[in-house]
Image (cartoon, rainbow, N blue to C red; front, side):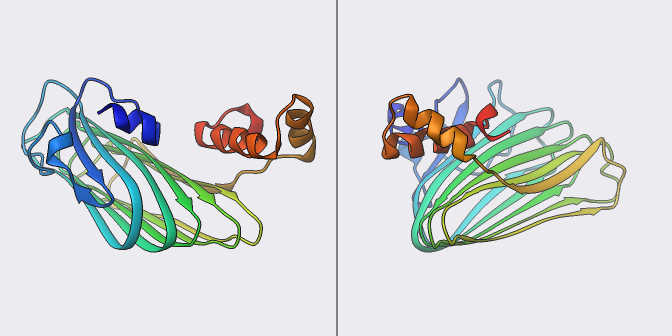
Length: 229
């Protein structure tokens, strides 16, 4: 599992893991022998989805009603060079089960990304943050919908999008909510991160070249440090 950290900057932690690379389930890298999770585990469950994407890709996470009060994490770090679609479909039917995800998309071409988050039981949590690195002349369509169904009270929901846009990058954000029960929290947001000329000059004056400055800005954006506030 060390390559996950070295290649994708995802540090493994004690968990039952389900690993996908380039859109393909990798049982040899996973502690679970199937991406279908149908029982509780003592450790958290960690879905890891990494690599380079092309064409149509579907990533389904189903937490069924047999699972209670389970911690679930999603780490997605993907790169698109030409054209790709990625659909993440989450169905959380586990009472008290909390799912938290962090998605990083580096787009050099054309990405159509969609996430659907279905709350299907009481006290469920689905909180997903997405960071888009939209390179020069890239095209990005980013949509997400949180569904809180009837009789699914006290849900915790958050669909958050943020982008760092290169020159002439085209970006469309569409975060949505469809709520039929009173949630504990229900949030959605979309924003473009900005850095100032003075911040770039400061980094240059600190001895960094252009390539190093871009890397610092990229890392700051992904890790959401004060540079972008």
